[in-house]
Image 1: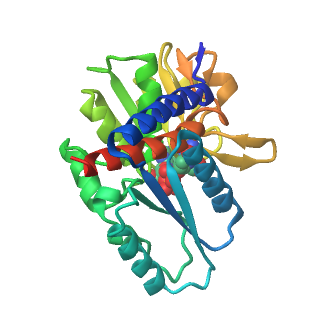
Image 2: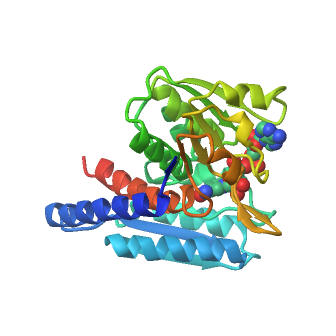
Length: 281
Ligand code: NAD
């Protein structure tokens, strides 16, 4: 079984991006800039944002974090986004989710200029991705896609089962696999026989949020299994895939942690650089 090393893949991607930033700097005499808006003091969000800033600096991006207290008014955030939209030094804008209840998430997402939407959540980018046009792609599914392609460069005709249909993970993952000419089945909480669906899959991407949902006898030999889940349990952090069981069957599997997670941040940097490149045309 191939243990898909997300840390290594992310480090390789960051090294490529670092070189690209240096080339862009010498060509344009400026570097891509990423601005993250962090609202409130939720510890996981603070850790994510700190990691994003550290990685952005590592590859040579200009990075900035704007912090607001939990009590910030929605209007203040929307005005700041408008200001960043017209700031030429800002290539990418990310508002760290989740947001406090009094702030309308959709309004915030739609306020970001689609050409600076490094999360790929703006309806314009969602539509462009599903139409097969150039777009920002949500970072986690993009990371999964790059890991799958490392194992199997030609996905044409493969049967893929995506478990979970969130806007963040399942739906964009489906679009990416479809673009590669996979036959894609998207499953969710109302799917009748998830095991039977998974058993037919050459590729399984699990993004559910249920610890160890995908079992060893759900996976056919030689399947590529990507585990997006991050679940806190008594025995520590586990994924949506039962690692010990599935590793006995699968051709390749991502561990949790150390699989998809590191690729998510590296893909945010990639998206920032891609937004910058499109803005220079
Ligand atoms: P979500 O809660 O938005 O969506 C979960 C999806 O799973 C839903 O579409 C639901 O229909 C489906 N589902 C629920 N129960 C099911 C069942 N029994 N069978 C089949 N489908 C079922 O979750 P999300 O935001 O997509 O996140 C999923 C997991 O991925 C979480 O554990 C989250 O922490 C993790 N995550 C990881 C990363 C990363 O970088 N690795 C990034 C984002 C999210």
